[in-house]
Length: 103
Image (cartoon, rainbow, N blue to C red):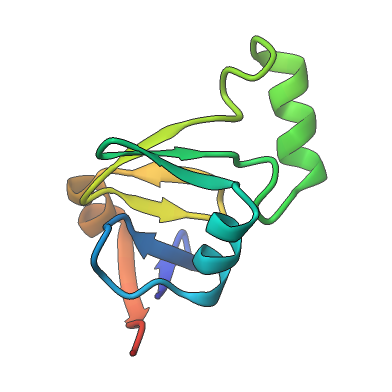
């Protein structure tokens, strides 16, 4: 889906094993950038929608590999544009949905 965050359009997906997966989510699963570990989604942020700024920040300010593999839970939202996993509560507080995913 598309949502506004800080006045900018973001590609987001509500993490679920059953809902509609946008093309970018399907490709990320196929390339192992997203993978399930029980009911947790392990995310390789540096692989999906790579950003030089994000990758540089990860390499300079974190332990190797630590922040580049965040975990999302069912019901959370993956904001791939801003490289964030957001809780449902925070999503509805800070984001505005402008386009739902369709089948």
